[in-house]
Image (cartoon, rainbow, N blue to C red; front, side, top):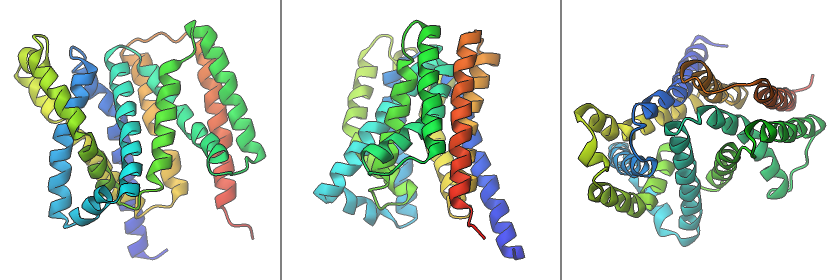
Amino acid sequence: MTEDSTQRARAGVASGLSAYLMWGLITIYWKLLDDFDAFELIGWRIVTAVILLLALVIAQKSIAPVLSALTQPRMLARVSVAAAMLVANWTLYVWAVVNEHIMETALGYFIAPLFTSILGVVVLGERLRSLQKTALGFAVASVVVLTFSYGRPPFIALAIAASWAVYGLQKRQVPLRPVESLTAETIVLVPLAVALMIWSFSRDTGIPNTANTMEFVLVLFTGLITAVPLLLFAHAALRLPLTIIGPLQYLVPVINFLLGWLIYNEPLDSARFVGFVMVWLGLACSLTDTIRTRTPTP
């Protein structure tokens, strides 16, 4: 490896680690806003994010691909489905965080890659290899165990995993860079976001009527915390192979699991712990399979 490529890889690792650490620690940010309605927070997040993202794509002179995607009916349909899955995922996540279900969000993002494998089989006609089948078996067993532990199926985790997996599938069909794609998706969501903001102003308990100065500043910065990790991820994705980027994604649910358990004192009984262990074993199988298939044979 040349000195240039070494420096490029180091820069990619630094950006990737920073992106995933920020995505994990954003839970703390949302927890600071847990006095407010999750739907209101999502409305403010979309509006502040779209303003920032539009400024970025205009500054980068890449607004043309965004406008092109939004004016082609087929591409607009794909962007709209991705936007629907994104807002569902964001809303589920923020609602779960502000309502003390952080560990269930961790479970959702642990399961999401396994849901992606299922979509690959159902939608793309891919075949599962033996380790992938084992991984899915562990995931199913985990859901069964956690259903007994919670006294109900882990609906929040399953919905987070499903929405994120479908979102990822749709993103594959939109030929835009990450920043451009997210800009297009947030533009599609602007009418919904504006409606939520109007609702926010109309409520006596809404954010504009109850937030103190610091809380309102945090709300206004939700767009920034949306865009910055994405930019770091985009920087890393150009410099690192998927075999490195892939495992980094598990930092997010690991951080959420530890925050929920150790910082916010969410319960972790023995049955729930066994359920998480089963998911981790499934992910280990999936990761091993990924490394095997991406490593060239001699």
